[in-house]
Length: 293
Image 1: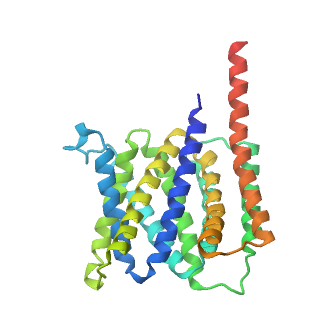
Image 2 (image 1 turned 135 degrees about the vertical axis):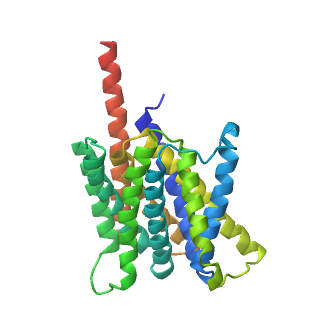
Image 3 (image 1 turned 120 degrees about the vertical axis):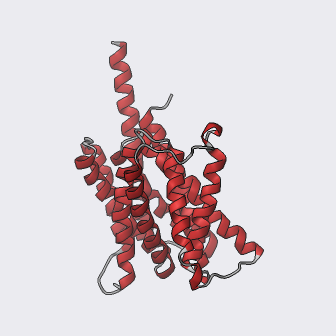
């Protein structure tokens, strides 16, 4: 039987996989207006949540005890989503994913002050190991800096607060409601861009645009479930795996062969995640032994 932290770990893993697929489709969709892509992300996410919500909540699905916090979560999430979509369209996929990994650092710090979580030495080591891996892969420098590099940073800040807000909301609100409100916010915001011109997609493109909403919807749901079950500072470093997926997709889809430095950095990213999961298994065994005594 898995502990809550271990279940949260697995939900985060599934969320990272779904978000990675969504990122690839978003990057592909650069021929379509950003607002239109946001609409598909939000609208089909709404449909998904109406399908999975409890039947008894259909008539009063909108009821919430914390509208103010929902609003802040939606606004910060919307800012983060728009920022990452802009970045994906103007920067290499691996670069965007790499920079976005600054988010767990902010989240870990925020969780200490806002959630009073205790972050142990092993988790700090895991975060640092993963971040070192990212530095090795990206080889950051100012020579290639341009204005679009600011958008992944905005995404990091927005996502960091989203993580904290979801953690607070999940104490009283169901995960599906948290995600539903966010998808509704995305849909409404995207409709504002309708007068600026949308493009009618062909059937194949329509399916892919719909999948942005489906993958984004389930990824957000699993993300919320992960934060509900586990400590934010524990599961956040798992997002480093998105870079590994980006490398894999680049190789199998576009034939990109990663360099030695890329493979070395990816290895460190994987090691950071293994440290976290193995540490949780060890702690669980220690608790079990203590109770038998």
